Length: 207
Ligand SMILES: C[S@@+](CC[C@H](N)C(=O)[O-])C[C@H]1O[C@@H](n2cnc3c(N)ncnc32)[C@H](O)[C@@H]1O
Image 1: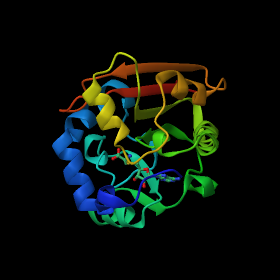
Image 2: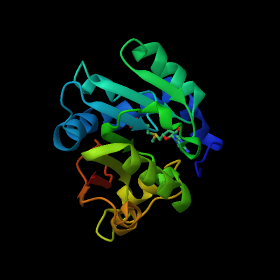
Image 3: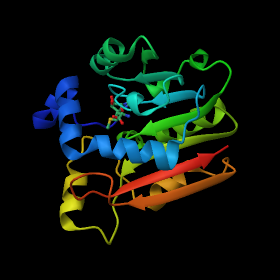
């Protein structure tokens, strides 16, 4: 993993501060768009959320979704279990040590929201391989990360470079990670997900 966990950014390790910061930046609005435009989950879909954080995406998904999420951070997982343990399953785990039994019958949707830019190429490839192997045919992997482009504003660029993740890529860089196994990879660059200037790269990869 390449994630800054010292200095001012270390306070983001606290679940409540992480959630508050996200909400101030407009994460609620971003999650609504993500769910409507890209995730498009159906009731009873099986969904695997890689790097689920505090699972604040869950309230935007259908009530009866079959949701499992995992994250490296024990504090985030503890917060997720406290809030949503009654309707979802959570594990504290590194993507490098993925437990295959987490999703036994295959997933309709795998999410990696805000995580690829925390991972070096080797681990990012491991994440993509895991997602592909866990998806049912026709199932989709959705990723979202901050990205660097020539056309973005200086403010957007400077905010993105302040992220805790140390592997922020260009849209082409994220596309290269998706490889050639998926039957289709649809990539979108958006600048309207948050209240602040920010550029996101979203991939929808269909098995
Ligand atoms: C920007 S946060 C996104 C959290 C959540 N997906 C969301 O949208 O709010 C990135 C998350 O990736 C997790 N993470 C980073 N490296 C990881 C790894 N190697 N395995 C599992 N989770 C990891 C971090 O702990 C953090 O919760």
